[in-house]
Image: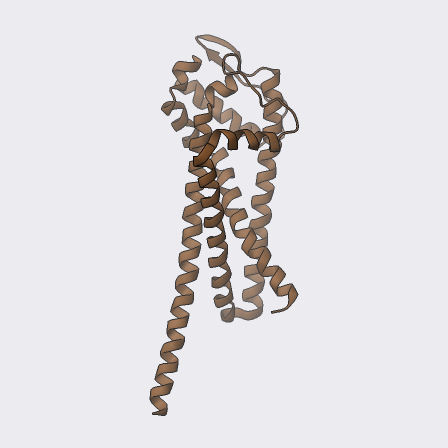
Length: 241
């Protein structure tokens, strides 16, 4: 295999976990069920004074904000029966930073998906059926790499999610707007740290399922091909005899 071929496949293997993980994160930010289940599980309505229906509306407005070019974030809701702005200036500034991060995730998910699609399309266009074998091998490697990365991350998260969550914020944001007070800031009242732990598990579970499908499918095809090769060799040997 040429150096170009090695580079193409190396990037392909890397693009698999990149797509599975960023795609799952993008899905999480846009999943109404994830938000609503968290609100219910952690009794956010009781803690925040915002009704369940208003919380669903708040989450819908947040999803709309992430997917639009509108600035700044402006969410009004009823808190203990009084309609008011939900987020203060510090929270609005932090959400602008979060939005940039979300868009970066969107770009990585799209870029990895486009690269994978181009490699697969080009491979079949040039090699047709002969491309299935190499593709299966690299898909299996990509799925396996995804599982390895998620296992490492999972062990780190279980060992200390608090410190991992803190390090993520320190590395992801260039300011301290993310340092909010649950006594005064509704952003951390309606999205407590346990919500983010559950969201992380939600993302990891979907990425793992995708990785398992790719790993099993690619490996099964390779095993089938190897068995077929052995069978053909055995039949040829019997024919010679």
